[in-house]
Length: 241
Image (cartoon, rainbow, N blue to C red; front, top):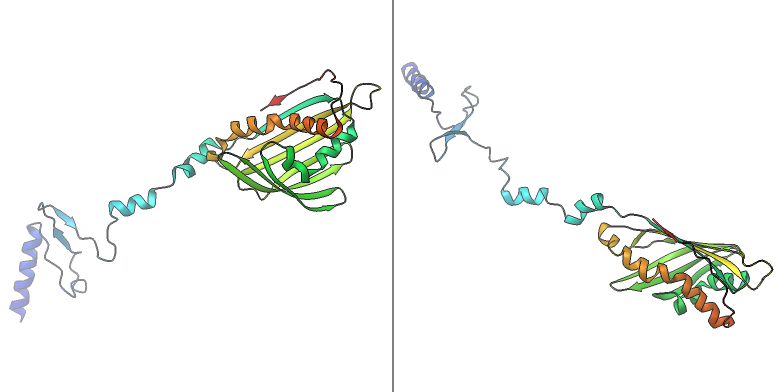
């Protein structure tokens, strides 16, 4: 037995000296033999990869590293907040214009692209309304929380919208021409921001089709309800960022 074992050891040493490694047998680790290696197809010595940890295929590696384009683009492009304001002298009283803006339930009849407007609740000077704005290719429904200071200010902030990260409108009412109670100064302010880079591409469309037509729509509503009035010289100041 001793001679047999000596022959095996000499054989292993000869293989090690030649740069080759024997194939592993059960119990090789317990015998203190070096880690197993194998010959690759091009005869280059390469480490054997354990079966328990197979290499990643190109498909699985691609799947792990791939992210949707919009997810990558959104942090770079961002959704810029846009603000717009304008002021008008109108030939209608503060009370008349305030009542039109406060009548949220009628917005669907005259506000640009507003297809539905329903008052959900009204308590003291606060109310909630469900609004739907549809301008191709988008239809957006959201809850608007409205706070009022009678005959002075109406502020609305959108909630639960899928399209807007932020949407706020502010109406302010003040005296018009000196000594003319049948005139008023109407100030309109809007601030909006889309949630995603994709939706932010609609900013120009929303701005042109909805925002810039807003004051004109309320003025035409006043003309329809109270009749045409003698036009007065308007002062209009607009800003956009």
